[in-house]
Amino acid sequence: MAERDTIDERTYGPADQERFAALSGDRNPIHLDALRARREMFGAVVVHGMHLLLRALDAVIAGRGGRPVRVRGQFPHPAFLGTPVTTRIGETDAGGAIHVSVESAGQVCMHATVEWSDAPPTATPPEDAAPSPAAAPAAPRLRALAALADTAGDLDLWLDAAASARDFPRLHAALGGARMAEILALTRLIGMECPGLRSIFSAFDVTLTPDASPARALRYRVERVIASASFVRLRAAGGGIDAQLDAFVRPPPEAQSSYAEARTRVSPAELAAQRALVVGGGRGLGEVAAKLVAAGGGHATVTWTAGREDAERVAAEIVAGGGSAGILHCDVARAADLVPALARLRPTHVYYFASPKIFVKRGGPYDPSLYARFTAVYVEGLEALVAACRAAGLERLRLFIPSSTVLDEPVRNLEEYADAKAAAEARCALLARRGVEVTVRRLPRVATDQTLTLVRHPAASALDILTPIVRGMSDRDG
Amino acid sequence: MADRAQVLAALYAALDDVNLQLPATSRLAKSEGTALLGDAAALDSLGFLNLVLAAETQVNARCAPPVNLAERLLELDESSLPATVGALATFVLELQGS
Image (cartoon, rainbow over all chains, first blue to last red; front, side):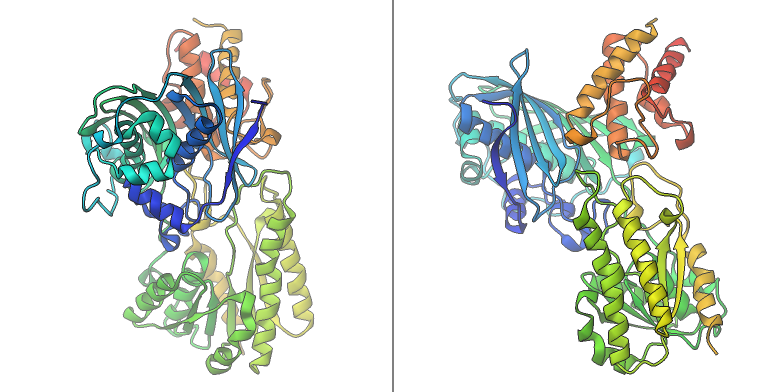
C-alpha cells in the first residue's frame, strides 16, 4: 500500500458508544454520559480508544489479510462524537511492522505499530469465550491514585460473540472469540476497574498468542505509579494475551466554593438590590457569582443550556442555605425566546458567563471556525441577550462581562479565544455607548472545569476573583 | 556513564516516538534547542508526560546507568522543569552522575 493510505472513515455517534460499551463492558461515563462528560477534562463524550484501535485493525485486515501478533501504541488525544475520524495506514518499517493511525480534527487520536502475521486465521472458534454475563457492572470503581500501588486482581472474561463478529468481522475471524474477549477486556480493565472512573487510557503494548487456550479471567497488577504525573502502568495477562497498559488518572471536576463560604465574603444585605440573571451559573465562575449575589441578600436566577442538573444543584444549595435563587433555561443562540421570562423576572444585573469549551485542540496554526464558535457566544449571544432585555422593557441594565488576561499576556493555542475576547470587549464598548452599564474585567486563569489539566497549573480561586467584582456591581446601584 | 551524545541520541529516539502522536504541523525537531515547555512548545500537558515516559524508556535502553527519569523530573516545580531538549539532556546526565 502507498504511504498513509486512508483505510476507514467514519463519524461516531451515541449508538456506536452504547454498542461498544455493551460489547466491552467499559461503561465509563466519559464515553456515554454527555452531561457528566462536559464537566470532565475533555469536556465532551470521548470515543473509546480501544474502539478506534479495533476498527483500525479490522480495516487493515480488509486490505491485506493476516492477523496482528503484537500491537503497541498510544491514544494521544481524544476523539469526540460527531467529529469525522479517519484511519490511515502508513509505511511498513524495517522490521516489517505496520504503522496505523487514527486522526480527527487535525489531531492524532490513536497511533499503533503492529507486528503482523500472514498465517491463516486461528482455528480457535468464537464460542471459546464465555458468553456475556446477564448483568455486567454498570458503574466504574473510584480508586484513589495513592491506593493503586500494588493493586492486583482478576477480571472475568466474556464475550457476546455475535456482536463481536458483527462489529469487527475480519478481526474476529482472524483472532477468534477468546482473543477478542481478552482484548476487549483491556478497555474494561482501565475504564471500569483500575484506575476506573477517572482513567484516561494512554498507551498499550499487547502481544497476542493466537492459538492459546481461552482463560476465564484476565489477571492484572499495577506495576508502577507516578503520583506527580497521575500515571499508572499495569500488566495484564490472559490465556493468549500479555499486555502492558498505561493510564492517567484525571482530576475530578473542579468543586467551587460552597454557599456557606460565599456567605463569609459578603454581608447579608449588601447586595439586596441585585436581582441577577447569572448566565452560565450552573458551574465555574457563574456558580460562584450566583452564590455571592444570594449570600449578599440578592436573588440569583441561575441559567442553564445543557446542564439543568448543575443549575438545580446550585439553586438548591443557595435555597437550603437561606438564600433566594431560581433557575431558567437560557440558550443565548435563541435569546429572543427569553423575552417573556425576562419581563417576568426583571433582572437588575446580568452576569454573562456563557462560554463554549475554551481549551480546544486544533490541527492548524489558526482555526477561523473556532474563533466563530467563541464569538457566537461572546459577541452575538451577548448582543442578542441585551436585545432581549430591551424587548422585555428593562430600561436600566447592569452587565458584567468576564474578559481574559490572555489579551495582556498571549498564551499559545488560545489565539482564537483571545481574538474573540477582544471582539467582545469592543462590543461592550459599543453597548456602553448605547446606554448599557457594562463592567468588563480581564480575569486570570481561574480554577474551573474549563482549566482542568493533568499537570496542575497555578489558578486563582473563583471566590477570590469574583467577590470584589460582585460587590462592585452593587456599588454602581443608586 | 553515558556521554552527552548518547543521551541526546536517546532523547531524539523519544522524539521520534512522540512525533508519531503529533500532527505533521506540530512535530518536534531533533535539536537541542527544541522547546518542550512554554509558549513556544508544541506539547500540551499530556504530550509532555508522554514525552517524559518515552525519554525514560529510550535513555534506559541506550545509556547506563538506568534512571528513574519520570519520577525525578515530575517531582520538580513547573518552573524548574527542563524547557528544551538540551536542558533535558543535561538533567539526565546530572541524574546519572548522582
